[in-house]
Image 1 (tube, rainbow, N blue to C red):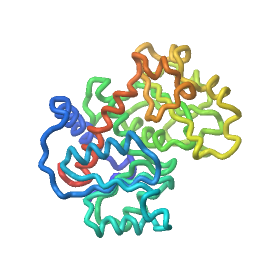
Image 2: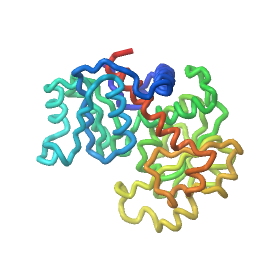
Image 3: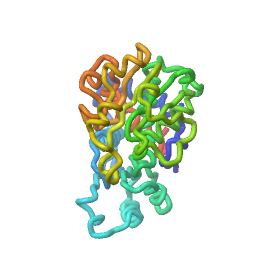
Length: 305
């Protein structure tokens, strides 16, 4: 029973290929006929979500399963029930898999310890978001012509991730997959929003121009003010001035550089409208690819390859 808890444990090459098969299938028929079954997949979301939750809901339906959406405010969680007891309850009720988003790092690992169904991590605190990193990698894989996914196909490519690195699970999971594929990764943030201990296999800087210069890919990240202590940022205006991805700053990157963002976007803060909606943006492509990738991930976890 394979779980999907961290990006490092993903069978990346196989998932990229399977996601492409699903993209092709859905492009030909957005609502392919499937044989409905009684299987339930629990979507246990302790934090708000639009893209990830909607993609996993669609993935369940495309596989003929029923998504059982459970939010913290509408469950026994508000009565003090522990995560592990919630997982035990869902497994006792016969769910085939559990997708978890949780504000605490390590929550999916705790769930794995008591689950007899596969656990899929949809984001845990500032720790990991493996399927987001997978869909980002898949978006780049398609952009660069779908090279052999078993090779270091991003070798020679520079990826700059700019924003709230300290609190970003997306940055951590992306760093794992991008470096596995051979990319040179730069992590850029104000000094207070870089991690206390440098993340391995990355160049850390608070100089945005240095990070973006000659980059092939620029990924902007949202300021996660809900996870910040007081005083981490002097002002939003200062952040916009020094770290916003805008057309002027993007001129430092390679001419064919692409722009990404895992969402949700705070327009006018970490990225301006002209770049978010411009010809170099892959942001909506990332959203579209999220469904195919989540179907492939769910299939893998359910043992249906």
